[in-house]
Image (cartoon, rainbow, N blue to C red; front, side, top):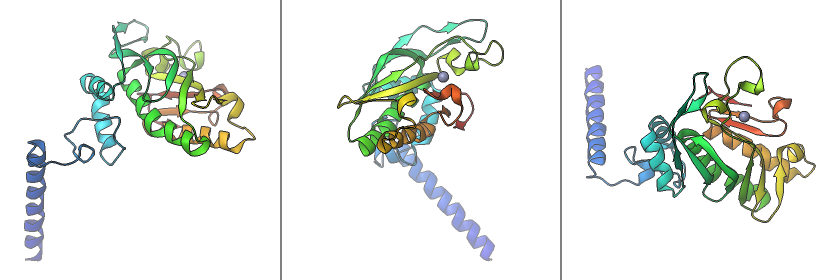
Length: 237
Ligand SMILES: [Zn+2]
């Protein structure tokens, strides 16, 4: 008897949830976009419980990915697909020169999914870390390249790097709106605790938005940059 009642209640609740979702999907019930799973990803929204779901949809769909960058007014100039036979090349890539607040030290070619991760990272990770620790905004991200047809760690053999598909960016430092400049090589172990704390928070925040984040914690090859990539498994080192 109790089991039958429990089943009836569960079934009723499931129907209620389904009905509500259909009404939300049809636009008959209005919910804020960040709480609406059917609303497209907006990079400018404060990240919430649906953000990871929306990002995973956008990174898998080039149209949704580009629309998300467009919506946030982030110019992403499409670059023709390049496919070469030796594991190098890219598709759905574009040239990007600036993010919400920070410019890149020079324009880069990135896959849309990597550009999306970078945009989310800059807006919701870097900006907050810089304001919290240094009281200023990040005005420029100094990078050391994105697309490069090469293997991991420039090794003569082994696997291709995510750089070979324009899914990765190496970041060596940041220039703040007030003119201060921080570099991984100079400030990771800085005696100025706020500088070191900012860089550690900048690393931690990258782990949320990128699949792979490698920092000076990882090995000596990364003493002077963060390697951030998409599609290369999961690592936060
Ligand atoms: Zn790299």
